[in-house]
Every structure is written in structure tokens, then in C-alpha cells.
Length: 232
Image 1 (cartoon, rainbow, N blue to C red):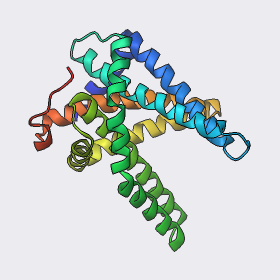
Image 2 (cartoon, rainbow, N blue to C red):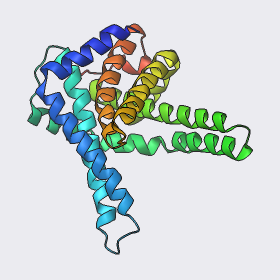
Image 3 (cartoon, rainbow, N blue to C red):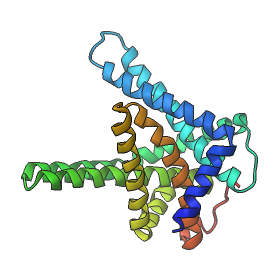
Image 4 (cartoon, helix red, strand yellow):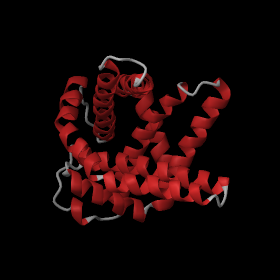
């Protein structure tokens, strides 16, 4: 994978595209709201703490799709508007929710393995590494799957299978990208001492992964993409 090209395109998008900044800001607010609202569950007798996380997730998914869609369109020399991007994102929400439902076995497996290693008490370092790998796996899987739904208009099951194939073919580049952003997150925390500020890494990670996805599907052919229609 051409890392230099991917990161230069990411920087270019943030330098010249207002829509990326707007959607990125909304994504950070949605993520922050989700974390705050979930922390309130059990501390209030009202139903509001249960409703607020759902609203936050709704906007978080819309902004994630919007970031991928707008990044793909801009790199393809298109000029998407905010209203166009927002309306497109809403059309993909049902498919993404179904994607998460289909991913439940993978999520359970990703939780089971670190738990098994932790209970075995083999090594604290090994447990930490397995938990980290499981988180990287799920994060990459969902992001690439949403890219397939957004960019290639795949239905949820085909998108999930495509993302698994992509991860199998590009295991080390995907791990490298995740580690780069993990180190960036750690540096931000080290400088600021505030874990909330680290949420901003979520935005460039999504944009970079969408650009990497374009390279992955160009380098290798996937049967699930043979009859797909791209949004660009």
C-alpha cells in the first residue's frame, strides 16, 4: 500500500474541504455525547439516559458514512454538498444497522478470546495485546464494511464478507494504519492529559481508512464488487 499517498490525500482533504471539517466536528460531538450519556445510565430514574445514547449513535453513524462518502467523492473530483451528503447517509443507515446485527458473532468471538486469555492468567502483557488486537480488528472491520456499503453500494452481508477478504489480503497494512493512529492518540493524551481530546483521532482515521479502502479494491479484485455500482 502507498502510505505516502494515503496520508497526503488525507491532509489534502482536511486542508481544502470544509465539509470534512463540519462532518468531523459533528462526529466528535456525537462520540462525546455517546460516552457522556452512557455514563449516566443507572444514575437517573428517568428514561433519558437510555434515549440519549441512541440519538448519539444515530448521528455518529450518519457522520461516519458522510465522512466516507464525501472523502470518496472529493478524491474522485466531485463536489458533494452537505445536504446531499446528509441525505445519502440517511439512505445507508438501515444497511449499517443490519451490518452490526450480522457482526454479532464476530463481536462475541472478539470478546470471548481476550476474556479466555485473561482468565488463563498466562501474562498481563499477552492479555493486553490480545485485547488491543481484538479492538483493532473490530474497528477496521466495521470501517471497511461501511466503506463497501457507502462507496460500492453493497448490501450488508456482502459488505461484511468483502471487508473480511480485504483484511485477509491486507492484514499488515491495516494493522500498520491502526498502530499509527493509536500512537497518535497516545501522543495527544501524553501532551494534553485529556482522553476526551483523543476522540478527534476518530475523524482522520475514518477518512484515511476510506482512502486505503480505495487502494485495496484497486490492487485486488473481489467477486462481491464485480457487479457493484460506485457512488463516485
